[in-house]
Image (cartoon, rainbow over all chains, first blue to last red; front, side, top):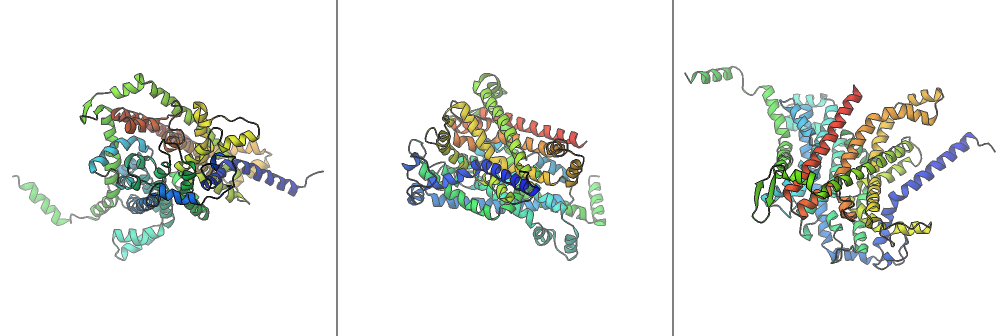
Length: 282
Length: 309
């Protein structure tokens, strides 16, 4: 039997969906397994694996908060990521605006200078930063976790993203503002910033996630449990011998990952675009 | 006589105000960038210069004294310490496995998902989801899934009659496991960069080629692939540099083991600095990493110039 054009098109589409569906398994499966194992008892986790727990142990999610100060650690992550985001937004839009709009001697050199920082891994500067923070007396505080992301390569990247966006904006409105007697800061705050919402949103999204997921800096700078951030706390659900307490660890991981994932599913378009914007600059 | 130049300047200043528009602009410009610049100098450039000095000295933790030792730390790494070349080999192996796998998969996914259609947004969302997930969470879950016999992956392989290895306990398999799980975590990022590049290619090109009777493969080979070359180049360099920076993923999945089988440069620096407190040696390693990343960046810039010329 000959296939008609539409039939073969439908067949192609089914093959397309099936093959992508197979590829998608290792992308989706870890999330499902993480949540389902978070509900299992310590013994069931090592039994016959099944995606649906035989007994739903809601108690795991209570125990997570008793094992370490998890609520406190959760709060730490939220307020550190928020602070880093707000500070980065202000500083990167100020500097980005100046680099795009204000003509001043040395601007070109400054750009080149900042560009060179984009690719340098944090591992390169972590040792001197360790001693710097020790000297400043801010070990085991959240100060390094706010300062280093703001002023490191990530902050530079945010500055560039803002600059690129300001360069592409039309100047007319700002000039009108100047005639109306607005100062530079006034123009930046009242005209340039409201026009650059998409860029600000992109910087906010990638900066929040960057800080939220940071691991090396918390590992190096923090030592007390109540100061931990989420990634560090997650790695810490172990028995006294260092073996992971899987049911607690996976329950805690679910609690840390799911809110971000839900926001992502709602705003996936915006979030993916933000990463596309930052990636092209690299 | 000495007062003469002074009176000359005041005379000039009275003719034109010191705060010209240009000066005013310059001051505003520097004020706007100063918070970023000052922070950058203190927390980034300063440490970067300090690393050079650290790498030339030996640090005695007990007496808190540093002694200048010249290039001894570099010599130690390059000629004496057998771990170093083992680590470099691991890092190169990691990059050589990760970069092509990541890019091939990213391109294949991007091609399948570059045109709007039913299910496209769904699949894009799925493939990108691990990118926004913390590497720590991702590594924890995969470590759980890849356990010896009890792990879900091996249980599933057993269903189809395959006796899976103890992934994270055998050096070679551990490296494979770390590479593959890292690819799954990060491939979504390159996928969207490729999608953006594919969507920027005018449709007429493909239609013209089709009218000439070109097959799908020929169109890809002769039209799409050459037009993607600049994107491919950027992605390749970013991904290679990224692969040298991987730390958290390996720290949590294997801890650099077994038998140092997954000990890569970023991890080695951390271990030497913060577990063994070999500050000078760790700083020399950091400088070596800096040079590697810098060379990759320069190569990228040169290739890009050659491409645009």
